[in-house]
Length: 345
Image 1 (tube, rainbow, N blue to C red):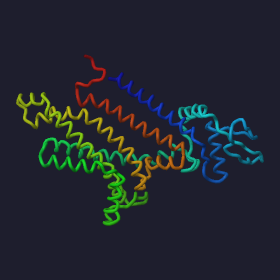
Image 2 (image 1 turned 180 degrees about the vertical axis):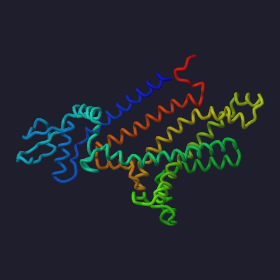
Image 3 (image 1 turned 90 degrees about the horizontal axis):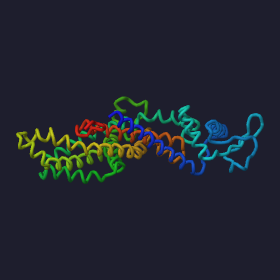
Image 4 (image 1 turned 30 degrees about the vertical axis):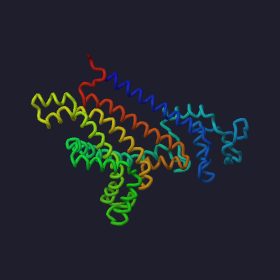
């Protein structure tokens, strides 16, 4: 088991390395965007890029290095010319800066000359709390509704739940939040219409989670319910469950001891898929509701072409997805004893 875990962790690191490397190279192939701000801010930005090894700095014009990115006048009266370093050399310097100094670069438009890692660290807590609360809220409700529908198969309860699930699962989260904001925030005034500020009261901050958590969880609840019902109905019609009933187990005992455990094995990958979809959906929802999380920051980084911010954001989403996959694989052995990675025969 330890060998399998080490192999999966190594594979996750390799996958993250490939994804981020391709992202860096492809983004660097895009046309260069100058930073915002006055001359002092722009000089500070290019000097930081020079220190990171992403641009050349000369005191005379060097046309052999391509187009001049920026020209500034130094305090000593001499001019500084900045030219872009070749992409593969930038890539090597980028890896060296991360591994030796944990330096991911600096923002050039969102918060000029502020470290990308500092900006991300100040915002990641909002997104983590939002997504964790959505998972905690959606998983038990969706699975319980699926179990209830499976136990009441082909009854009015089952038909009602299945019909509502099929209707509500097709409603996008941004449509749902627009409706909820109109009803509960603007018309009734029960909930805040946007994310509360840091100076708001604790009660107001708690109320601020209600709308985004509900909107992120709504589609996941429907997905869990539909998948759980389908898997449990299939398991309940299997031969081994009939054998368990003939040996004297009641219907409830057979379902709880055998059907639920076997049905949970394919349900867990669905939980992972829904978790990743929540991460993706939170990007749009954070933008609409004004939540200062990394999902909104990802959208802003794309709009502003702030590549260093984009790289760190991409690294976080990639790492979370890969870690979720590792935890999922390890959980199989605990759910079903027949699945033991590296166990002796």
